[in-house]
Image (cartoon, rainbow, N blue to C red; front, side):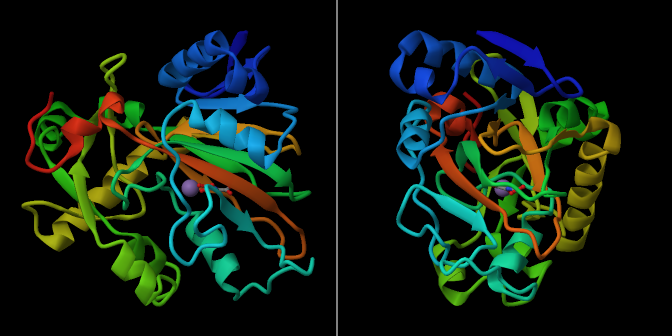
Length: 293
Ligand code: OGA
Ligand code: MN
């Protein structure tokens, strides 16, 4: 297996091992898992993508989420990100799925608004837009390491609130439905996620982050915006340009990502499986008011 670095200090392409090998071979899984812990974003090209294989690959890394209430894949392991209707037509720009795509274009990490939050996401390209529709990533380890010492010390034992309705509200006031609000109330996690394998710390914020415990709401939102702006400076971005057959996996503990827009008249269909974090992934220390392990 070869690991070819791609991005500014993180992200790598994996060659010589793919979904099928990881799904069936313990040594391949161990090698890819080690690369995941180290590089945070892994790119696999030319994969023989099927739903079954994506689930078998993803399950190696831990328990799978079921897609959230009122989303296209509700009740299945797949979050479906598509602008294609079941009858093959494309959704209009004011359609809920188009607005959801716009919300995914805000810098975020997946499922920080859930209990448990996500370890990793696995996104497979089923139909790729001819232009645009890239996905961009930044390292939140780099974000943490570049904080000045006094701010890092302040945030080290701080907890932030995450709310799905907060990020959706940035796009349209009622994009999060009543059902989504009631099934996903705001949750709080430590602002620093420590990787138990290598001890590296990452800043844990996203578009969903709506407050910091013990801080006035306005001050907290201002600080979160400043932290996100620093984390996502252009020179820190790794951009993935999709080809059909690509699979990209990322560490939601240690990165943020965003989708990029594409023309409304082009179809795009991406299927995501999401792996929940467990205590083995450093979750135990993330709970509010518990001290770090
Ligand atoms: C996701 C996501 C962005 C994209 O799958 O979690 O944010 O480019 N995707 O589709
Ligand atoms: Mn996402």
